[in-house]
Amino acid sequence: MKKIGLIFNGVWSHYAFAKATKYREMYELLYVHDLTADKLGEVDALVIPFQSNHKIIAEKQNLVYDFLAQGKKVFVEGDSSANWLDARWEDRPVNNYWWVKDPTKPPVSDTDYDHPIYRGLTPRQAFWHYHGVYTRIPGHAQVIQTNVDGEFITWETTHYGGHLLATTLDPIVEHGIQQITHLDNYCDRLTEWLIGIRPEGDFVIDQADYGVAF
Amino acid sequence: MPFNAQPLRGAIISNSIEGLDQLYRSDHRIQYDILEITADFQPDLSAYQVLIAPNGTDHVALYRMRDRIHKFLDRGGALLCCDGWFTDWVPGNRWVMDNSRKTIDVRYTLREDPFGVEEQFNIQDLNFSHGISGWWACGYIEAAPGATVLIEDTWQRPLVVVDEVTTNGIMVLSASGPLADLSYATTDDSKAYEAMSNLYKALLNVILQNTPKEEVV
Image 1 (cartoon, chains in turn yellow, blue):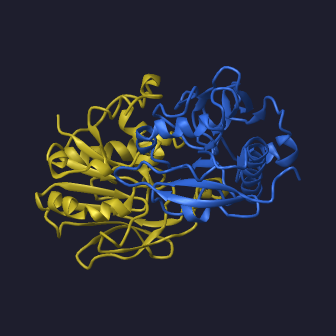
Image 2 (cartoon, rainbow over the protein chains, first blue to last red; image 1 turned 90 degrees about the vertical axis):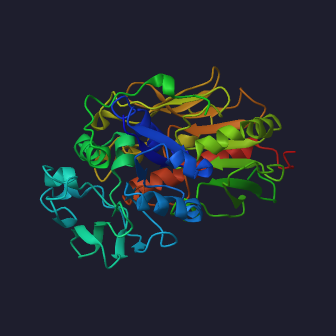
């Protein structure tokens, strides 16, 4: 089975996602401090989740761009860093309660539902909240989502060989946290886009995965 | 005030996550240093009395330095961990992730309070952020025998534990419920924010009253 490498800095939500029965055969945790070209050679796509250690990733950015140059896919979520990405991320207050105040007025305005990850998603499944925005993206990038202020939420480029898709959404982290109930829809499409396999089944947590050696 | 004039020294473990530097404020009670995790992270903890593992901690790095942490605790140090420690580095206590309960049904209550924490924060305000319950903690703690369970959830599962028995030091643990002076992206609901911050200050008081001022060497 093809594998997705999940760049991992010891954050529990990353771990919970990658260990859930639904995803554990498809995702491989790659501890960022131990990341090497050999380890990346064992996976077919990469995920860099929200709450990553972007300082270390910047130090190892050649590994990511070499991976892209092989024609593979990289998905970057949440906050990011201009130290390794040709874009400018800026912080914004997190509005994770807009759906309580008025579910008809999400802070995202435009979404390209023709993109394979977003195709078939409802607006609620395509957006829950974002962590900051991109105020500058590469000139060769295509915009997939913007917020109500016209700032960039999700974009993609094939300039580096493979597909680099960056979003300030946080599907991996939030699905690991398991407080938003509809994220199977996004994460399953994301997984299928990355390696061509659509996960099935429930998000089951095995308690034996907790309190472990690593 | 029972505290000495000299503030404690606290080490905050940093996973280089956005916003960490905005969470904790040094004052007359405690002075913080941020220890940034590196590839071979084995920091010298001898100058510190308090070790803080904030939300978003690297539990691989802490597992790799667990022997240092255990020695720190056995020499009377204080550990505050407010994250989900899926690796086995916290002596005697285990955190377990769980998704079998709906957040809409989650309520936080005080089980036992020998430290007078209830007088320092409003637990009802912690229960809802913008009307949403179950926002603060995740999973639950399997507490060490003899540890104090301060806060539990709807199903009596421990969410905040103070363990003064497993080691010679003190451990204050939350089931990934953020604890800090200030909020960063966790909540901007003023009441929930205040409750979280006041709970942190109350738990810091528990540490201050139970931690020797001299160096933990």
